[in-house]
Amino acid sequence: MHPLALQLNATLEQEGRPVLDMLSALGRAIYFPKEGILSQSAEAGQKAKRFNASIGIATEKGAPMHLSLIQETLSSYAPKDLYPYAPPAGKPELRAAWREKMLKDNPSLNSKSFGTPIVTNALTHGISIISDLFAEAGTPVLTPDKFWENYELTYGVCRGAEMVHFPLYDERRKFNSEGLKTALLAQLAAGKRQAIVLLNFPNNPTGYTPSEAEGNEIVAALKTVADAGLNIVAVADDAYFGLFFEDSLRESIFGKLANVSPNILAVKVDGATKEEYAWGFRIGFITFAHQSAKVLAALEQKVMGIIRATISNCSHPSQTFVLRALQDSRFDAQCAEKYEIMKARATRVKALLDSGKYDSAWDYYPFNSGYFMCLKLKNACAEAVRQRLLNEYQIGVIALGESDLRVAFSCLEVEHLEELYDTLYKAVTEVQAGA
Image 1 (cartoon, rainbow, N blue to C red):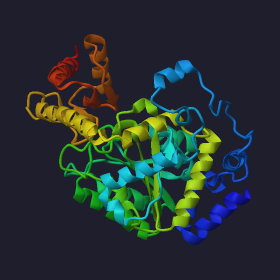
Image 2: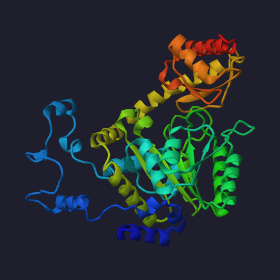
Image 3: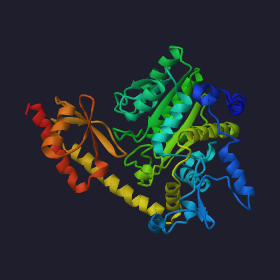
Image 4: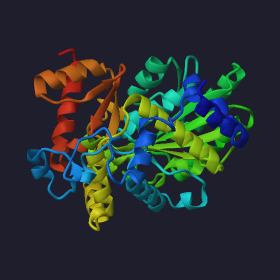
């Protein structure tokens, strides 16, 4: 193993042994090179005042070389903020600004010890980095039975982890924290020493976020099992953070999990994708919580090693665009405006579903946030309904399993929602009738 990896692992062993135990073989082996091209280029950038022949870009007249036809469309940005490579962990100014945003959005974090967000190529990349660091063949990865399908690829297919599911809702139609605890205890009883728990709120596909009390139940369940000896990587997948429309958690569950137990490593994966309505920019973040600054620094180095080994660094222009938005005085007002549009859509959907006129066709799963909601069809195959909607009515929805349909109200105007659900109802009744 490389001496730098050994050094990082020694730090983790001394400062946070459970975190070292959580790492996969790749997680233990990875490091960020201190003496390679990037570090030598950084040193040259500070000291090579006459000629700097170390950097892997082209320059012209003291600025990054670029095509004027591209710069013409980006004229409000300086070339230095667009064309050079960004640092592997991201632009320092952006990382600091996102940390400030996290504290503003999650006041409970002010009393917690957590690191500076590390820039990723959006949330999928962040989820993948966590998989690389902590998952390998046989590692149990727990999610509710309503989950984002990409988890299967990232953890199950790419890393060979064991996907373990528990019912999302309990008999109260609330988050099933007892089911989560039972599933974790089963891993401990089976001799597992570690598990990864993926907590995605608002949930994709159901649009459900737990209440404050449910959030406390989740934390208590994880802490009980962690105290019993299971190391837990608790990942808050906050892809749809902030889109909370009814009574629910208003902060990320990351804040409740941070520093709650030495055997729980809390990780927040979030980004500008939905929070700034910037899907194509592909800018996300990973943030770790731990009492030890040395552990946080070691984990940052390992994340930087994964980034360096895979994509080298993330898009510099996108980071600049996101940073500019965060620094703009209009940012909060414009985000609030978009939030109200999304809330109005969710509220209209709830009113339609509660009207009673669709009761013979479906029930719906509880939802209170995010982009989506899910229908549970009665006596109709979800895929057959999806096909009928698509082929007969030119309407697209997502079929999940035998009976569930995911509907994204995020991409429909309020005035079109009744027509959508009326047509959904028509298609279900036609399939029920064998049409």
